Amino acid sequence: MTKETLDKILKIVLIVGVFTLPIWMSSPTYLQILILLFFYAYLTTSWNLVGGWAGVLPLGHSAYVGIGAYTSTILFMHYGLSPWIGMLAGGVLAAIVGTIIGIPTLKLRGAYFALATMAFGEGVRVFVENTDKLGPFVLNGPRGICIPLSESFWNFQFMSKVPYYYIILIMLCTALFVTWYMSRIRIGYYLNAGGEEPEAAEALGVNVAKYKVIAMAISCFMTGLAGTFYAQLALYFYPKAILGLDFSFEIAFIALIGGRGTLAGPVLGALILRPVSDFSRIYFSSFLPGLHLVIYGLVLILVMIYQPRGIQEPLNKFYNWILDKATGNIEKKGVKS
Amino acid sequence: MAKLEIKNVSKHFGGLKAVDQVDLSIEEGQIFGLIGPNGAGKSTLFNCVAGVYPPTYGQVFFKGDDITAMKPWDICKRRIARTFQLVKPFKMKTVLYNTMVGSYIRSTNPAEVRDMALDVLEKMHLADKKDLLAKNLTIADRKRLELARAMATNPEMLLLDECMAGLRPNEVDEILDVIRGIRDSGVTIFVIEHIMRAIMALSDRIAVIHFGEKIVEGTPQEVSTDERVIKAYLGDGYVATGN
Image (cartoon, rainbow over all chains, first blue to last red; front, side, top):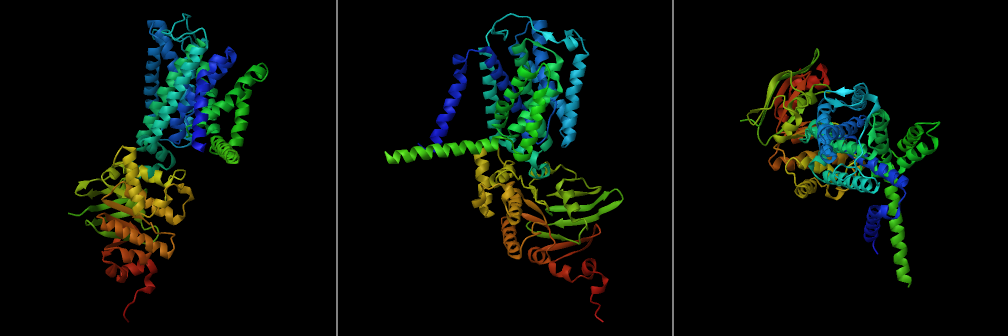
């Protein structure tokens, strides 16, 4: 067996395993943990288009999650519009806002862009927390919105966790596919080039600012969709939960630790960091709330010192080593027998 | 009609006149050299042509069209390519990737772009290094990559900013051959260079600027014997007076 076939078999096993998981794992608690893991992997993959490729550090993506959640929920509660359609509306609105914010801020470099997006994210949170009614729409300020229960596919509400699991899994796969596809065509090359050496890219015919804004719009659209998903999963959300700074930070942490600008980085980052967050919440939330962010910070420092390109790099090497080892052994055995 | 026409271009940074009323005209198929002591304003003039910053006064024409103050990417789309004095490779990407970024201006089809890039790398003798990361290249190869990337945009005119600085003499000779080859394929070349041996051997015409002003223009022979040039480079004491 060659290395390539073993690699293929392992990947197929992984995909089949992930897609059939709910059949043999019935605990809703663990399913919920996995759903959130995929949710963060999806968010970070969306973030990665700007934060990874375009070479800037957005720290206000929670705003777009919030825009998605509030848009679909308001449309559902006021007009009875299905959250599936509201999801698209939220995504489009997030993309529009992202573009408007991106046009002036993406010209800033380094920390200034990060600060500007952070300020925007916080601005949105403070605004929503202090607004009970926005025109005819009820936002309920800091109390948040409770979505009335009525289970049906059309209402994007399910009693079981299983449908949510599949929805977010498909969303994640789609996001990964979009990222992979974009990395192979012109926009991917231009974004990566502009992120690394903007002057050189401009001299090669790349309107760097324009491509960054396009990336921002796509990223915000995808992030907006996640907002609706979160709202429908929890059925209750409030500004602190989905518009908070720590939420934006968590996305950036996962990307930086997993491997910024890579396909596998966001998923691996979520795979490693989400359990830390979930278990620290289960065991320590009563006396050490926010402990997971402290742990993230420590991990981030260590990763930045020893693996500045994220943990995807050593893991990739390790995986290749295992493949070599396994195929090598099997071939040797074949020769002996 | 001149390929590139620089008319009365000035660039002031506050009170400093980095470039002051320079006129140049470069004919199709020429290799035109621009020399001058350090800080004379050569790179500033280049940057005014390449769109990095707009000139304070004056105009730049390419094939008769006014390209003054156009953005760098629009100038590149008009088929003027440039290299940087301090090479700026996309370090974490392969040589092929670097070159493909340049080729994407000609097509959106990845397979086509890949072929074009490979073709350029072949001509630059970089094809065997196509899978190396740019950060792992030697300085000579980085300069070559800088050239390959610019050539990948398929330019009619190439602006070379000190593409031989820091090279060993035999490496300089290799690059000279490459540049002559590019000219023979029909590209007009505007080059800044410090290495006198190289620029004298290479150029059809040379302009000398000093304190932002053009002091002499002519053939390499004329320029190298001009009194003002010797003064600018070596000081007043070195001018042969004939006494």
